[in-house]
Image: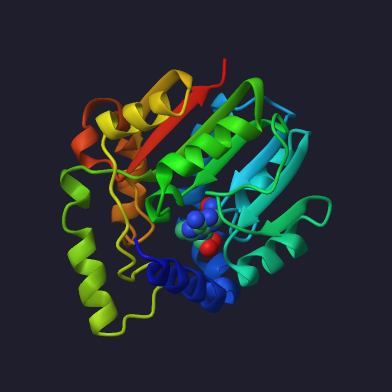
Length: 241
Ligand SMILES: C[S@@+](CC[C@H](N)C(=O)[O-])C[C@H]1O[C@@H](n2cnc3c(N)ncnc32)[C@H](O)[C@@H]1O
């Protein structure tokens, strides 16, 4: 992704900051986001000192600190960061990129990133920064777009959506990268991480209409475990030992 692509992503999220929560914090969107977040919460230390990369409007930070602990978020979009500050005034939010973190070494014991990694221009740089800012024994968990049967047509759909000017908070052509297990294992291993666990998550997608969405939520645990070709996202957790 070129610098122009990153600018396009930043401009887009600045523009949709006011409407983003209507999409992800209501009805199906909320269920979808909560489902993804639960995967991360389960593997991160409870009540820890969290850094959330690509924090958006602070949805994940808010969820994480409900069980105690503290939260810091960073995002390239000023508009999204402004919303996050309003959502969690007790937390710290900064404008910046996950590829160059403005924090000291060993600053956090938990790092998260929800639906961001596919946008990141230099994923190896981001993971090396995550490793640096994590304390020894700290944990990282992220989920992002996975390369599977069901996601194969999405880039073309997004390109078309952009051409015909569909108003949608994410339906744009940003040149996102869709990851598979091998790439994730290699990236995390090369960044120095241990206990790397890669799995597939989410089937009930926010853009499915009801009652298909409700039906999909029912079969989701089965899809995640036994039919990963139908999952949208890939989930990775790892430790800095
Ligand atoms: C789909 S939104 C997800 C927001 C939030 N994580 C959530 O779960 O609601 C993607 C976010 O990633 C941010 N982003 C994209 N590239 C980034 C980067 N390189 N560093 C930090 N944030 C980035 C965008 O500005 C946007 O807020």
